[in-house]
Image (tube, rainbow, N blue to C red; front, side, top):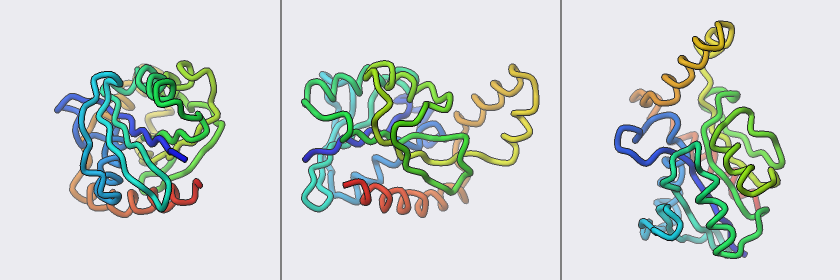
Length: 187
């Protein structure tokens, strides 16, 4: 069996280590953990791709270079060309409905407004795939959600494109470890 683990994020240098790129960061963590040191750009998939193993399961690690909001293009190409079952897809992404420091596995759930997940659902014509959701919510977000749509949206964009603080980066180590343990349960 082959599992496809896709971390979504934005490829440009300015987005590195931002909250919206936590999916990319998790894939990098997995690549080290699984000794999948062969991550390289594959132009057919417009993605950085590598291979590893969890127990006896082959895992394909992917960081689409299509930008978060157009992740579906790369994901559908990978599923189709590699002839993989959609139920073996796991998408790793940021989630503003989960408090920072927490992770959650979901299956067959709505996008929750996440544009990258919406793109994947549209491209695959289904929501029947797994997601490892990495929480980003902070108390300031609750306040922003009580403001006008415009102010709320501006706050959200600024927040997800901001970089993690040094203490948050330290906490990410624990978050990624927890995420990895949850991925192990998806057999």
